[in-house]
Image 1: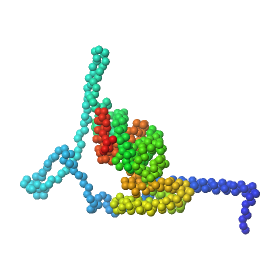
Image 2: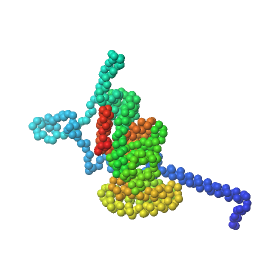
Image 3: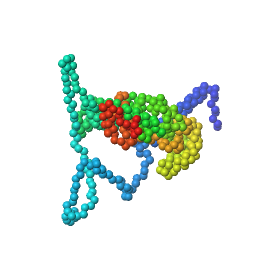
Image 4: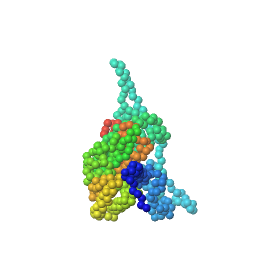
Length: 472
């Protein structure tokens, strides 16, 4: 017997239908919310911008890893030996000759034996460190005419405080480069050098070096601005609990760090200056002012996004993510072959020309799905179409922004140890010291020597030494 249809004129039936519609809408809303929460739970360092350190233990266990090898740890038979090279003769303090007297086997005398090429064994030791203290006795005289007391001035190049240029440079190296706390820095100086300093003295040295390194920081920033290819990335920073942004602006020769209060397009313009050269970055909206044909979008970010699609519970999104991942892997593998000399750039350009229509097709398919978090991302990628394959047509442009991310890594570790800075002066100290250190290391130059030269120049009223090879 067929079921009777509900009577639309029945008040009870109308109330029941209305209640069912409300429940259907609520169920749909809750199902969408569950899908969002499950998507958040699936996020890890491989499919989002989360760092690997933020992965849960279960997610770390699920990371793909190489199968265990049957070989023993350490150097394998036949591998190229890497021996420590002996120091050159001009770096050897003293020589001590030792000759064998008797044969180690039969004890025969070796006085008349033929001499062979000797073996050289070098032992490196540090001398006993004793602080070099200079006391300046400043005479004072009282004027017989007006009773004014006059004190002799310090010689030129002598600091007002107790820390000389070399000690000041070492303090900055410990706090600003190796990120020791001021208390641990003071303890290390006392234990190793026998120099007792208060925490306030360490802070004063940091303040003075902040001013000394201002010109070098500007020099590095201008060098990156002039570069043909530059990388830009940002991370969070904290100043006295206030949220700020830490920018890294890097090129082949220099790296500049800038801490700002915000992360808007106007802030980015202040960092990068004139729109010149090719900018490698992510798809942040604050970079939209840069001409799209002069940009390269980071494919590492895109791969993480495509991985999130491929791990979705929605079959359509999963299929889309797998297709996009395959296309990304094909052209990136070919780029690596170009870097290794196994393929030509012309071949890479031809491959990109064939893959780009397929990529656009799948992105348009994703945009048409009308699924939150998927359609918008695909539409955004289509808007950045001109910036997807710049690396294939311009030498020196990589497909990822890994260079900037690697430069940021040390600063991120500093932030985790110290929770940021407490003042604007602390911001300036951090960004200037790290700028100088990263730039010097890119050039293979000695950090402590440069800091010492900068201190001496400031005490004598001279310009800071050039940070870049071609000068400021």
